[in-house]
Image (cartoon, rainbow, N blue to C red; front, side, top):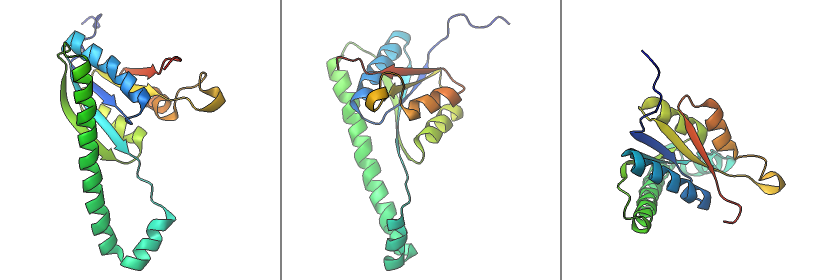
Length: 168
């Protein structure tokens, strides 16, 4: 069977940190989804960082009470982030009402951003992963962000890394 010459884009995973650069990258995801009639899954990952402060709180409140408080707060934060993602999507839709792309799913996960993006990409039949690139400091023009770089290097699916233009 000959290889596909022109890939069919039906499902796009768009990973966002809700930054200015991520908003710019979303424009590319929307444009591709609109052109190919693809659905978009939006993914935001909250980095889970256990700290020394957690250990102090556990010592003061006890493990069960801390888990209960943490779970309540996580649920509130996840709900708030899903609302922000929906607002983000609605804002894009109002700017480009002619686009007919569909946001099929909005996901918020807790963990290591690279691992969560890779797990999501691996677990479903996405045709493309879209991420924004961040450069920091003096070497901003020479390097892409560490998350996007590691996703690009390790992902088995095609990855589109979108840089913020210099004038932005």
